[in-house]
Image (cartoon, rainbow over all chains, first blue to last red):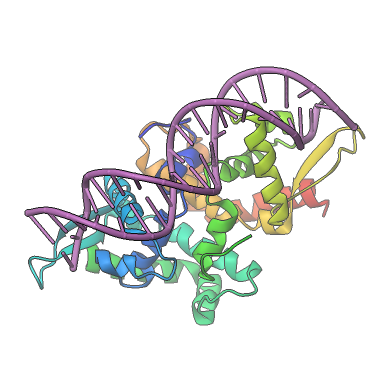
Length: 137
Length: 137
DNA sequence: CTGTATCCTTAGGGATACTG
DNA sequence: CAGTATCCCTAAGGATACAG
């Protein structure tokens, strides 16, 4: 990874500053998706080649990891790392921001209310769930 | 602007999902930059053509606005809009996230401490300052 | 000082075929 | 099922010149 600068905003951009990475993270965080074909089926219609490179770069960046699915050993399962789960706060804030300005948003109204009025609690609760599901702790 | 979907994360991506927009916002929010040449002088070395298109797209997206500088009337001054200032929360969270994982970060330590321990207060105080400086309220 | 306009190069992305 | 490998094409970006 080549850095344009050591500014913290730029550091984040080097990880997720493209049109696809954040959508994959969204699927992992909020849509319970864990497998290649599930990401592929997202409504935004990513191509296999792009999906492959994005998954790889997220893995190289330490945001996600891959391993065997414990249910079906031959199947590959993607997980968020600590570093990836730590992105939850600004993902939630981005959703809230869009909820304020996108008239056509399909964001869940209950989620937006919760995220606005009890942000810290919501983040804590999702973090706990993700830690269990993705890190096993 | 063409939307891949109406997902709120995608809505945000359509506005700032590139390698430059967030750096311009950073300069407006945290570096007191308000003029074209100041953005151009950023350490990341954006080209004039790219800077021009990014400023334009941020303006079209309703994130920034431009007007005459009140001090020197012939000079153009960029301002954050309400919608732009509302991005502050996730900008702060992104900086915090980078501070946790980027060993070479040049983020201000005092800022990170404040953002971690008193996030809401920090955001409120910066929002107030930006509202005064950029919106005049 | 604040931009366009231009030219050229490169990176990103779509489509498709193919493999373990 | 989970990916590479190609091929091709377009959009994004750098350099530079120039204009209001």
